[in-house]
Image (cartoon, rainbow, N blue to C red):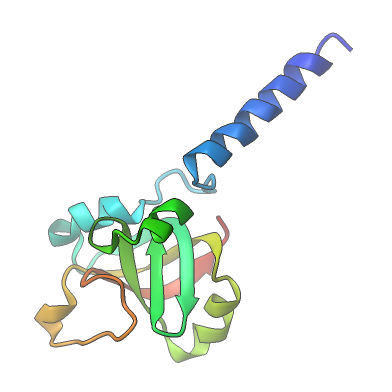
Length: 135
């Protein structure tokens, strides 16, 4: 019983920390926030990366954001990476829209250098989605 109150406090502090930061914990601490991938996009171009963030995948709005709060602010140049989703994964990813997730794939530092136009993308920095994970 003497460990009950400290345990409850620790649980509350952990949950409150996630709620106030607006970000869900990741199962992989090495996963990057989209803003980090954007800042390092020149160096990461063509690399396999894992991004974690708030997933938005709906008609003409496809990206992974640092947080739900950033999505609401819509500062896409600084905090969103566009999603290039293979046809076989569209339904799976759209079902997860509005939740925190981890995306694995190949980072494209600038879609314009490939001559690609992405309708519904949030940024010229994009990820070719290969795998969708939990938060």
